[in-house]
Image 1 (cartoon, rainbow, N blue to C red):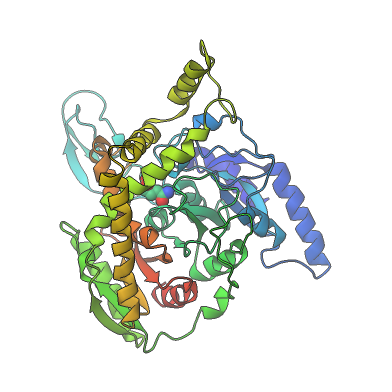
Image 2: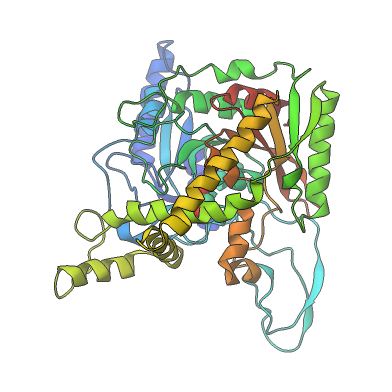
Length: 482
Ligand code: GLN
């Protein structure tokens, strides 16, 4: 009731939930109460969670925050959510996200942007000419230029799991599910001062989760601290015969890794992550993280991941290619929206034209282009080869004895909603993923953990990258930073 009350009181301001399942939540909570009363119950008994709109939830709003899935309520439950309910978790509702998880700011959602609960605490004053669209889309009203404070600018929570990160950060759920194809768990976690882990590809079943780029997509939790993330991931993860890419491996007790000493552990610092134009405060944060781990007895080792610079361009070929194929199914026949046309082809075209937003159309067009007969070898095949090289870089580092790699999670803190700079050029927005996409390209686990505030009082995160299926070391190390 407390969580539902908080959602009802403030969701209008944050826009984190796109559907609130009041009745279902109360019903599930009652069942949990009964179980707990009998001294029974699972690891998450009675814990209220928010679910990203990408997860199929039986009979409940599941639209990947796209218009094209209008009114879609699946008749199935995703394996991840089924696992959570089996452990006693309670569903509060479905969370806002970038349309089909394509974005880094939650601004591509059909349901509108999500507002980051964090605000700049240091008030910067600046002269904004009346015609100038300021940070956060603010337009000074009336007459001549005047001094305005910028502290009222609303910030993005990052994306694509912006609703998940905001709901956790603003106490509108105890934890949330999220997905990460190129950073969508870790970047919003960093922007909201929460913890987000993208597990190893295959650790968590993708069955029943709306597909974006199938060889990169992986679900994971966003939670308020490292321990909560460990408990949630344990529950979400499972080998699943319904997802042939899910790994047939036992899921360890992640919580047990928390508090284990990091003395003697080898922490790799990749020099290629010191990118041009990286703000000084990000470098300072990185140094702070290095110092903490050193103080805890870990050994700091400089390493090289030479193909890092190709990760972002290769990602923006592979991800749209797979997306263009996955999104072919939204044709006005099988799901959601249908816009009538004069014949079937016209109906397809009208439906897709009306149903998909700008960013999704951009991805479908790029993907179709790079997969087309004349260009396949030059783009898609080449990107897949680059991907192998990126993977080998990490394999070499781990073979040389590195246990975990430490990097910043993002190149900056949260930026303003409708930030002109970011939105004028899609490549600027894509650059937000510069530290996170390599991890998806290599299929590795990565965690973002809050590590400090920037000069304006906004949260910043560090990222830890681990060996395949070694999420335990990430929890162990992240706990030292937290
Ligand atoms: N921002 C990246 C993209 O738009 C990553 C999104 C994601 O991880 N789902 O593709």
